Length: 462
Image (cartoon, rainbow, N blue to C red; front, top):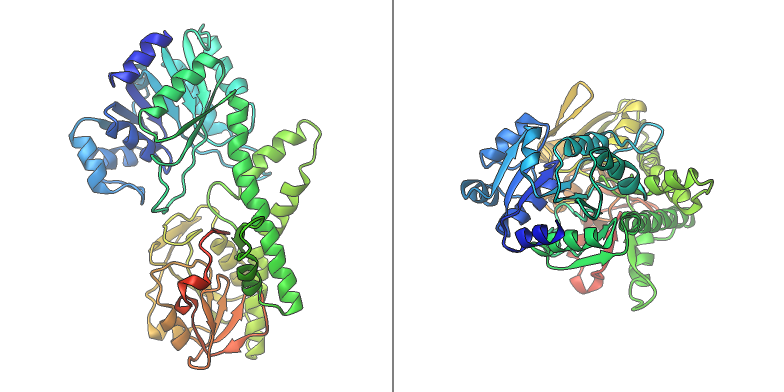
């Protein structure tokens, strides 16, 4: 079985299926298709499938032109028909793994995907889970379902885990050139999964087992969450001391060894950093171990939107205004710059907290025209001089490149800057309140005017 599968991968006669056509699954599908495989993408959303088959992408990093070319060539097709999975020689599962309200793993999407794959499994099939989850998922959830079908892992079927590494909006690192970690249940499983990904990924990194591969992803994002928590706490320290946290960080980043630059912000967002460490924390609680670093970092990071709301309230108070009844404009609702992804965005918490205090809040985001919150659809506004002058406070939450920050500081009266996008001069109208630093100053210019040499390149943004 292994030799037959390896031969089909080698000559590109293998049919590949990807379950879940979102931020991870669609780019992966297209890399397999570009490598010469016939790819059947499976998703439960008829809307998504119809759009993809028409050559229309719903993912910012996947262009319509790239998609249409692969659809027209017959290398990629999408379907909602679960039965098409039986045609596959290899299946990658890339479905969401959210947290429940109690911050425990919600494995319902993984369970549904595994059950669908098991119903359509056959000898000679390779199955790779890419969804971020806790160590043990592949062995404890996927393996038993296949064994119920009478299939032996490593002989009849091949089972592996390969953590997704997707950074939406990153112009340099994408699916093909980002190294891919692969760990199988058996050496044969690792060998076949490695061969599959080597067909379309520049660098593949085999590891000894599925648990190692599962833990790699959690370490990566726990590392980021903990360091962002540290620099966010440093921002609080600097604010209490009246010291410019950005100046401290930039100076520390000149050290050529032993320091990696992270920057503070209004909170953490996206599907990975706010969620992934909790998978590890949950797993360790089942083993009666408390992950103290993870819990503390989560506590600090989750409180940053409260700090922003309090900053706004104090700044308005300095202008003899109350939050209650004030008109506030939030700049940026995506979780990070230059993308349209709002998953776990701290901007949503900032808006909610300000509205709870009685403010009227509008937003502008060049990448997000509108979004749904419960039953309500919120629409953004144009960033005009009138809109900036009408706002009692402008809050910079997401540092998109497409925003004219010179216009912001020229027209607004008060700017609460959580991303260090503006700095003080004596030429503009706005009074600027930093996330952390010396007392607010009136008259600002965009930080972007600083020489590039003054800004160290290695930055891990919150």
